[in-house]
Length: 241
Image (cartoon, rainbow, N blue to C red; front, side):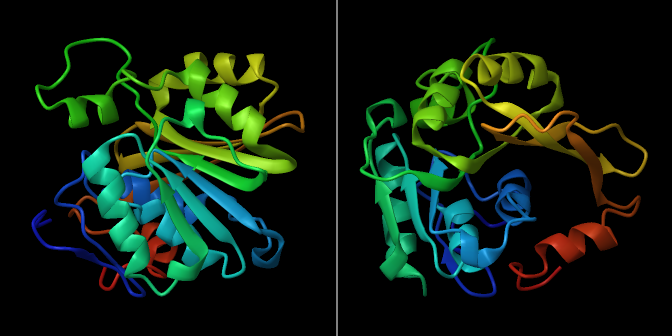
């Protein structure tokens, strides 16, 4: 992927050369799969926490044509680029990016869907660039702060979706449960057919539905081409697969 050029989707482009985190497969899968069983007409408000370039928020705006979609981003250059990407998209009338920490975010509304590709390296050394470090590490947004904010912004029947390394599951879900968020769905993401899942998309809500529904998606075949299931998931967005 050439990071100096916008990432071209079917219905929009995403400039990401100024962002702490570039457009990546993790984010695009989250944008494609979050709340996939929710009727499009039922979603009026959606929120992307840590929106970065805004690609996930833009995917939600494409999928839910009646929804107003907000993004929150603490990293200044990323927030500016997300604002520009929103402004240049076909969905610009329904999209706003806020440059502030989610802990300080207050709106006179609640959200049907909240998504986040959050910081996940809670331990270990950070990179020298603070923007990248903040995006990769819990320097400004740990799991407890994230789920506390989500709990206060989510509608009673809304859903929260996050993608994380699978080995962060217990810490993340413990924090979520403390804030009254229950696990309803897990999508296990395997990088290749012969590998174990290394990412999980977690779907949570304020409703305890009992046992969570589990399914698995494999991204690449052995020859590094997309699997048919990945093609199906991403084809509404990617210009070519």
